Length: 437
Image 1 (cartoon, rainbow, N blue to C red):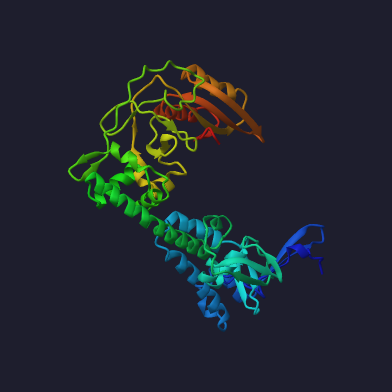
Image 2: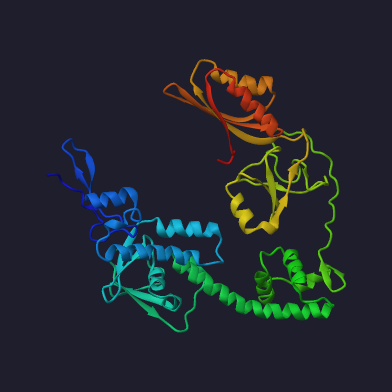
């Protein structure tokens, strides 16, 4: 009855999605000249679409659905079986592999394989078998020779070309998208790394014996911390590849046959800087931080991703290139840093110092009214005597939205400002935002 758009036809009847979804989607030109999307499903298909395949196991017909369901859970089990991966890596792989659209490709014998959109010839090789993927040097897609990074399209027929001399490399991780391919490549790289690390382990053992130190867990852990490395494996690997110089071990102190980290030298006290309203509170001349019970001046930088100010709950992260970086505990990067680099995290808290200002931002939403901007600026600059760095106000359909960058001394001052803004007539919402946004 209506003219369809050929680009918008989706046939999930012939090839259902791996999660069991079956339907025919099409977009047609309606009688008023508007595009209308039509989804056609049977009652059984609709039940599965609304409530899930597992909840409607009774609807399965034959072995097709069961095979699909089993394959989907097999993929998840395979991802979970990789003990070395962190929970964050698993979630990222899960999103990229299991929650994306699928394509359907064919083996030379005509067997169908489902892969996520963006899958490459190498992903297909690993889906056939781990050994096939590890030895893959290229492929024939529709009888044409292509590289291993070639992205596949639905309907392609693929034949994998292998070589016994091929082995996985780290750059493979840049273009594979399936969990199986990523985990197998990582496993192969770690195995290769372990072989190299064994040589480094032997070199370190000889070096420690020459110094009169024992080759034990304590000394190896001490050296791992000394070189700021995430694991013993990384230490042995960098020794084997000569990425670190073992001559630096002389800086460590010896107690019997045990190595001890050198005590940190306290930096000289610097004069307190003069107040500068144009400074954003970064680097050396910013706020004081207390570590544990001491109150020594520490050189640090504030993370651009979350812009902490005094009073925020924060933690310090010892980076390899930039020294100590301060993050808010609510920072979007906090969970990754705490999970993967716990040994580099330092407990921190703010000392009291009212001489330094920090740049932060607030977003204000309210009813557009005469004089509302004047009320806001008078409160900030006149009553609270805070310096405004930038202000933008946009009004639309009787509602205004304002973004203000201001210098505050600490979180208490910011909280007081937010509280007093809420008391102004017509203000509906006030929230802090990071100035980098």
